[in-house]
Length: 183
Ligand SMILES: [Fe+2]
Ligand SMILES: [Fe+2]
Image (cartoon, rainbow, N blue to C red; front, side, top):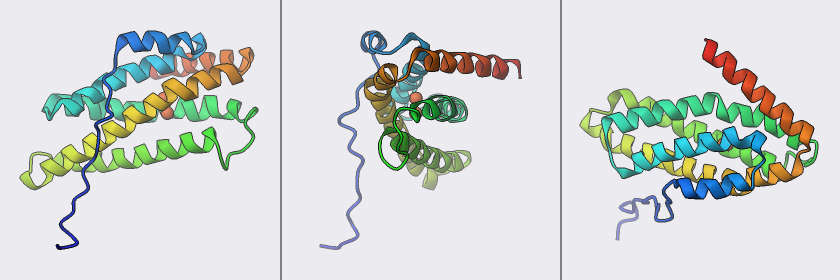
């Protein structure tokens, strides 16, 4: 048996479709000040479901655009508005949720950059399969990241941060969102 015929295949059998009914439950265990983050997760999750459903020029272009916007805004809001406040309560940046969230964001940013690089050549036969593969990996990583944040990170942050810290986060998100809409 040749050693280089093995091609690892991404196992996505644990993929779960984004459901409105589940989001109602999730929102019930997360503070209202943080709900905008969760609403964005639900929107992006549905777009990742479309990527998983199969290749379509429109769905993939749409997904790539939405992921780019998510990385520019949502990821940065989590890193700049939430993590410094969580750092008042969880002191280590070498272990625990702050380190792991930043690490996951970086992994997703790297995979996004790879998919984006292939996008202009997607119609070339030799590139198409690789592009689809990269998009599916990216979609899977985002689904898992969102799942973790919805079920662990945001419920935990809701309990740990005090009311003032949560109000500050909501105000910062509102200010930045208004500023980005003016551009
Ligand atoms: Fe995140
Ligand atoms: Fe998030």
